[in-house]
Image (cartoon, rainbow, N blue to C red):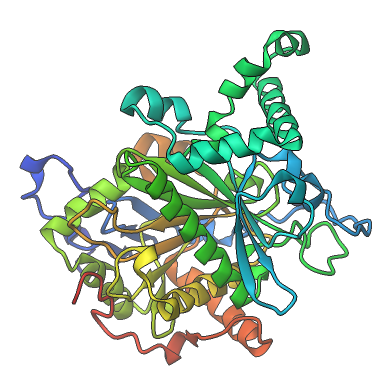
Amino acid sequence: MEGAVRFYFFRPCRLKECRRLPKYQNPYFTLPDGTLKHINPLTGTEVWSVPTRAHRPFFNRSLTPPKPLTKVSKENYCDFCQTEYFRTPPEKARLVQTSDGNYQRIEKLNPDLLEASQALFRRVANLFEIVTIDYWTKNHGFEFSAAQSQWKRNYLENPRGMEHVLHMVDMKLKMSGKTGEEIAKMTATEKLNLSNGFFAGAHELVISGRHYRPRAEWDNELYSSGEMSPEEHYRYLRFTIDAMMDIYANNRFVRYVTVFQNWLQPAGASFDHLHKQLVGLDEWGTSIQAELETVRENPNIYNDSIVNFSISHNLVFAENDHAIAISEIGHRYPTLAIYSKSQHARPDEHKEEELRGFSDLVHACHAATGSEVPCNEEWYYSPRDSIQLMPWHILIKWRTVNPAGFEGGTKIFINPVSPVMLRDQVVPRLYELRNQGKIRNIRIATECEAKPNSLLYGQK
Ligand SMILES: [Zn+2]
């Protein structure tokens, strides 16, 4: 009982006048019955890991047995598959592998050539934007950039391009609930006006070229981030960062491009076909805003409260020269956090070797998670107009826990998998994957250097 009752848990108050209250006197504390209470030092999310609930299964594995796949020369399982390139909006860019093994990015591919190569990754507008082209036009006076106007003109001048765009608009109208009759009454000009988001919107998808992993025989052998080779995963991140920079370059009103990946339907994905989403915003969003306010008070908080804290509580589970991976406290879902150690606080500023190192750890975490686990990948980095800096980090949240009524009423979240349990799930898998040669450039568990203050964000 020693001291258990002496600790109070303060939730963070974002009102300036309340800042004097002590914060999180003890953010990570086990009660005598084994209940672990942990509070995220950056968000204030309070989580309890209750031992009795830990016996429930970790994964919501499918109860239906897998079905054999029919062999096809080109994948045709969903709208993101190789045979369906015309069922997504016009392609902004694709990455291909050339015959000599190099990688090549092709931009704004002519519609006649869409099917002439196999894409490793493709970048297209989201058919249903969260922040729409109208939002930018009406609220900010956004206009097409010269390059976007030119592309739209070129695309529509091509008969196949025109047909593709009109078909996509029809598809969108139909999915929005319009009847066939209503759609047929619309003129081509009216429809083309609805296609502006395809060419100049700021909500995009980066879609993987594959649906199932190579040589898959069963329908549960999906191609997840962890199924890629480390090289493919690096290319995936590089391609996504290029997309992010292009959104900034074409829309001056975008202050932050949020990047995320929902893997499998329980994590919010509409298709079980791997893709990331990028959404340009005219603000930083609440969580980045709140984190940067915390940084203003303590610029070293990501070292103090995350890395150094995790080292002393033995929650660092993997590392390399450029990144460090932590089983992070205070998340409603079991969460693997990967922090870039770079001095550069934005993804696009990372040098190639830094990006490769960071990508290798993110890839290893996905591989250890396994393609059957629904998860969200969320990116956090310093907005381009922020003076305060945060290190680029990615959270991988396992969507294996369903919040219930208790959470809604109390804002205390029950996460049956404590950070230590999560670490102990992941570490043996990492050793196994490394022995199989599937992950690279990683130090695991006790091999980690785990040096305090190893995040150098913002340092010259
Ligand atoms: Zn597919």
